[in-house]
Length: 139
Length: 150
Image (cartoon, rainbow over all chains, first blue to last red; front, side, top):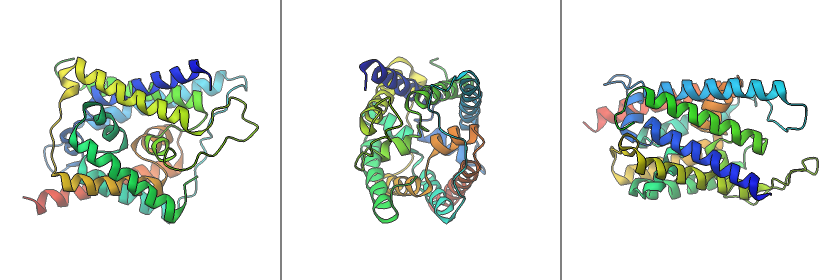
């Protein structure tokens, strides 16, 4: 791949990591505050999702509208809603509620060498390998 | 931005949306973090010959995630509000949580970014269902954890 394109991937990653940090989503207390609906509920995560979904959704509409066919874009087609999806999402939610980390914020906290991330990320890699080994890499 | 207001999550969300959009256009794939990370752990599958950009497996994924870590590190250094980190769980719980997050995201085909942001924004039914399930599951988990550990 051309260096210029890789540089753009680095920029995209940088924007992503900065967005996670600026939004406060790298702070597990804030994420768990959103998930604690019966406690002192923190709406911040909802604002993050709203901002990201709006920009991505409108952006993809615009990109598709102006694409002359030179871009290869992912389809919006849904995969089947099967047992694998439902059980996988439920297990992910269990881990997310236990730790207050989802994959992005866990990786972002490697940028501060936080011990929670240094522990969580390798454990996450092991969990992924187990799923891939016994249930195959997903589509 | 040293003081956290609800503008922070809004601006952060917009940045995440822009980043995902850029990575989608560059890669032609949904750049969910669990998917990008997970595919670094298995042998690279070369793109079909129809795709000429030469965007093979691992390099862009590794660069994208290194950018993510770097962008976060820079933001932690620049803004106090971004650097705030309040650990809530013992390290043993964090390790178990990591295992479950890794296993669940690869089984369910995505996490908060791939399903929650990209999939939901495109109106993909599976992503909407997955997102509702993992948020509900996480809320129930927090509810129970807070009552058991009090």
